[in-house]
Image 1 (tube, rainbow, N blue to C red):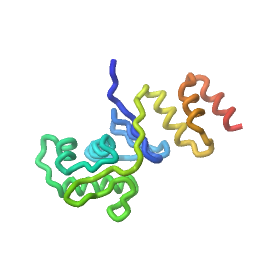
Image 2 (image 1 turned 180 degrees about the vertical axis):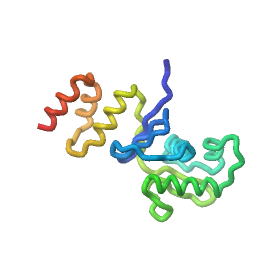
Image 3 (image 1 turned 90 degrees about the horizontal axis):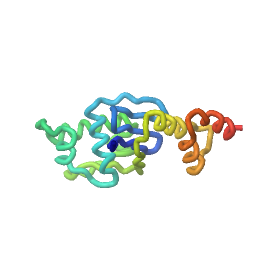
Image 4 (image 1 turned 90 degrees about the vertical axis):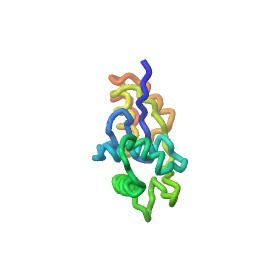
Length: 155
């Protein structure tokens, strides 16, 4: 069975495309469904300018939405992510063109609830410096052995 679910990561944020889920440092952030769909549309096209028409077709396919509505939703999404028009932390505006998600985005395949919960938890731990090889090793460790391995890393 093929799974189209993806976990997107940018800075300290994780977005689960299979549910309305946005996390920062492991904490769940509240986000309206429309803003979540807008975020997904930008994440899926990260690094390139996405036109107003493309966003409207992706987020509001059966509704008559204008560019001003898109702009208001982008402003609200920026607020949720800790940015603003003057300080576009993640979303840049290109007047009369559209928007670009400008942060580096990692696409992590969904491997199951327990696996992804562990990945998010491990990535949010500030006390443990995990190099990519150690993180990969932990993510491939059976869940019942992870606690022992983490204790070894901390001590």
